[in-house]
Amino acid sequence: MNISVVIPLLNEEESLNELHDWIANVMQSNRFSYELLFIDDGSTDNSWATIEKLSEKNDAVKGIRFFKNFGKSQALHAGFEIAQGNVVITMDADLQDNPEEIPELYQLITNDKHDLISGWKKKRYDSVLFKNLPSKLFNWAARKTSGLKLHDFNCGLKAYRNEVVKNIDVSGEMHRYIPVLAKNAGFSKIDEKVVQHQARKYGKTKFGMERFINGFLDLITIWFISKFGRRPMHLFGALGVLMSFIGFLFAIYLGIDKLFLNPSGRLITQRPQFYISLTTMIIGAQLFIAGFLGEMILRSKRNDRKSYKISEKINL
Image (tube, rainbow, N blue to C red):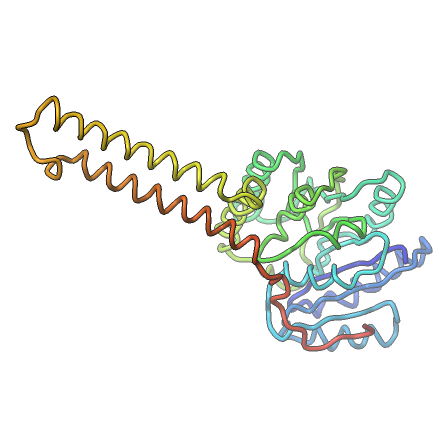
């Protein structure tokens, strides 16, 4: 199979028929063998009924329905698990991503041997204050922390070699930083392509103000995982040793001062340096223990990527 198109969605019944017909026309005109995977992330409208009707008239349409809303990352993970195409294309269901981009994305993966091509919506039709400016800030921070020179990490339109999606773990809210996950997994041929962005035609965006805070928290998380995910003792142990050493120096100073320099002075417990010494050594010990526990957890962790539960499937 040439292409698997993975489309996570939440309450997008109005756009599904138009999106399906558009993608099907692109595939047929380019003679691609394909599958169209709709991942219904707990929609409360008639999205699933629409997917069922589409599957009746097109055998390439497949669907997964979650019991409830688990998030875009889990929807993508479910689609990645079952995708069979040599190239996997992800796109949003709101018609803001243009299916006409698919053939060129496919060629960039197959002919130019890229691992991942990320879309770059250079010209956007979103709110400048509430979406464009925060996105620019996130992308700048992501470039600085990851080393990837991409302009739009969070663009829903991306293309992957099949091996990439089978070897990355998209969990939590990490769908924003899939290129970083791919880089951490060892895939280095990552590039971007300017893609057309279209104004939302139906409904309204599913993302609120909380996405800004979550985006920064996810960025900190992925930075930590990238740097110390496999060796937490290197961070916590180093900080613990540093804090303990500072406390030890204060303790030596207090001891020398009391024994040799000022034996008749105040009691050690009456001096602020004593509490600084005690506090830093306690914190140092706690940090060291945190690093040790992190190492133990890594060696005994279980695979908890599947935090979603599937209600129904179509053609699978």
